[in-house]
Image (cartoon, rainbow, N blue to C red):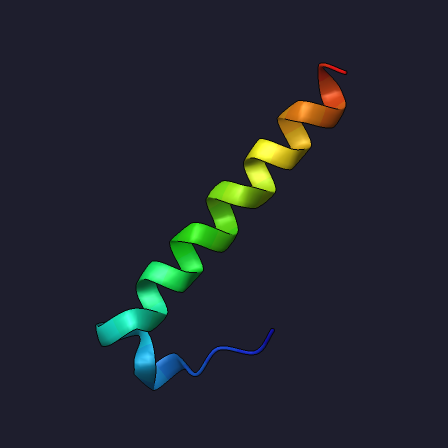
Length: 33
């Protein structure tokens, strides 16, 4: 997934946050599995 840097002011920031949160959740899931 490639996000445009100039699109962060609209929905790009939300997509970036969602991607970070999902990555952290998956990492925690595999660590505590």
